[in-house]
Length: 315
Ligand code: PPS
Image (cartoon, rainbow, N blue to C red; front, side, top):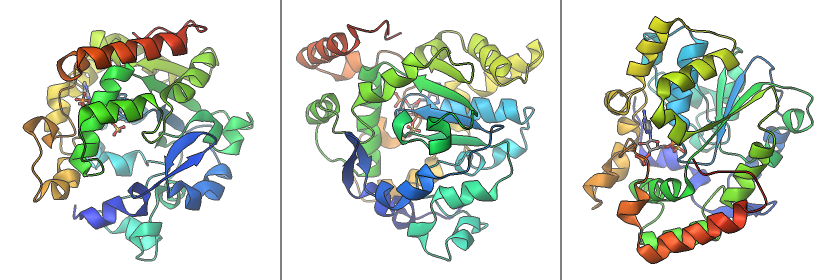
């Protein structure tokens, strides 16, 4: 893979816009029409998340289940196996995406790439429900969807490190947390993203998962996901996949750990050891080590306020 920062960042990361109250990367404007009108296949699987909720973990699980635990095929970079719907794609050694875009990296967004793949495919998106393609929103097509959430306090800390790793945020955690609470971090406000999916969780084509459940009993979640996808696994296969999906294994796995992709972002920048990796800590409750007592209180009040009229529980 031959990636440079310029190609990866593209216009998508540079500015933000607000659409339906959501803070989105500016490039969304260019893609909106194509996203709205996307032809959706019922046999595809959509993984929808607020960023830093366990997306990559779920993508690898779902791709493996959908592809009969094809370990050889899984050596291909995850972004190429599970297209990231609204994000410009990186260019790999085969230059496949570059060809799609006529050599213009800014236009090499993954909608073109997605369209070039044969269904069933596994699609990744961070878009909120109301900005998904019309065929999904209007119930015309019903691909299976897996929505994954995580304790927003951990999500926020993970996102802070991610933003610093990419160089898209240079401030301190305190300020970042305030932005997160105010819904100004892209794809926010957090609750406007989570709660519509929570309300839909009993739809037969939707599986609502929590990062904390995956941490607590991954085998159980693997079984649940395989049944949801109608691709049941044997006990032996569950065990093999469980091993493959451990944090330590994924951290070492170049197809999913984003090490190569993010390497150019680290050049000439001083960032802490903790921030040097996409696969950073992979634990529950890390916010307790990172946030001040006042900030934890602010988060707790914000959580309480936002879930009080719902039956949502954090974990
Ligand atoms: S992204 O950028 O939105 O796609 O990020 P996402 O994949 O949603 O979230 C990244 C965080 O998930 C952790 N992760 C894992 N935790 C436990 N086990 C496994 N296998 C695993 N794979 C990824 C990753 O470490 C990020 O969390 P933090 O807290 O930053 O470590």
